[in-house]
Length: 241
Length: 241
DNA sequence: GCAGGACAAGAGCGCTGCTCTCGAAGATGA
DNA sequence: TCATCTTCGAGAGCAGCGCTCTTGTCCTGC
Image 1 (tube, each protein chain N blue to C red):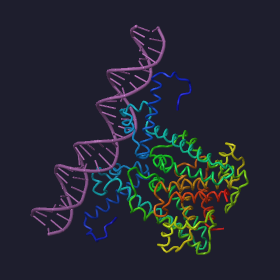
Image 2: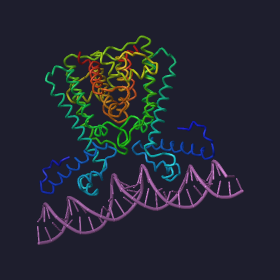
Image 3: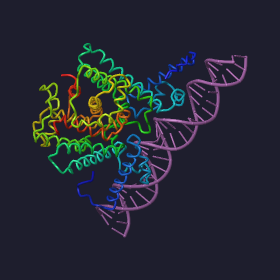
Image 4: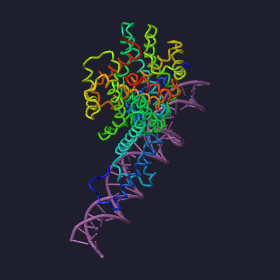
């Protein structure tokens, strides 16, 4: 976002920076309050004491504002999960590290429902997430993968699936390249990759269900339910007892 | 929706019925084309050749229109899954029945992205799904539960989870009541209920990931990926080989 | 046949995203 | 220092939105 090419920090450039930050902060507050679809550029303009046309000096359009918010939220969520996982003292206790990371995902989501909807809900109508957003999105997944990779290095092996055909490797080729490129596991067992991807899907699905109200009537104590799910996923991954 | 109390089918009542149907159909088309958040009452009014205020004679407001569409979509999806599961000839082949039902969920969703977003995506801003929508929503889940119940009756038992504490029963009390009230399994094993709920979450999570683009870069052949997931879920449920 | 009700259309309110113009203020080169 | 050039904020305006109210017309039940 900030220009690297040592721009002279004139009064104008400084003002521009702070005002841009203000606009983003106001938009973030609106997002938290009303949800992504109701985010109105005019409303954030009023919040920062500007007329709507003036904010177009700082933000290209509504979509650009949403993109900036998406990046910010992915980053915040990723950081929260990183912190939660990193503060588990016993680094050998992979199950606890897994649980801590998963819990952090849910807790951030519960605390930020509007932001969650922006990240993982229905894409805003005409809006297509640009490339800038995929990188911050991986930050969170990386934490989970790292935990699984550590467990795998310690000898944990997931139970084999029903059809252990060779085509599995090409099916999840993208995901395998992803972990290999980051030096986590090279030549990861396809079954492990499949199970990790499934687990991540279930984690987010569980949070989604809770956030969007699809668990109503089936489960009351959603926090306890989430823990049960996360622990069973750990077992399916070959982690834990 | 339709009045049961034998309304005299005068020309006016007849016209009212067909026009209401036209409006719903137009709204459905708009929903499929533009997604739920962009559904505009004025646009559907134009599509049916009316002025916007005239539509309010037939639809209370935008939320009511959305509710009607939600019910219609849940019903359509439920019927599709029911059909797919029912046409599996070998009723003893529970795995195939499970796979057929799961595939139907994905295929309907892929064919109806806008509708999927309405059902399982971010709730529309000020909109809260009324009670009318929860019943049609269960139709689809019921198919999956019935398959699991049949497998259970045949002796299938899911692998025990990591912590088989007694609290599990109260945690999923709502879901157990749900299946008991419909005479599927009374006194269902909590572990089975947990596993079924988890499986349903993963199925929808997988479809969600595909629909909302979170699988991009990890998996290319999403249809094959879905089958792999569904089969592993069957295994985790104690169904299948 | 006539009164009452259903209906379609139009105007209007306040909101939205976004564009264009204009005057003021800050930055910059001669 | 001063003229120029750029940036900025405000305002007006366009087209669209959900929704309400009024008006005139047509249909239906008595």
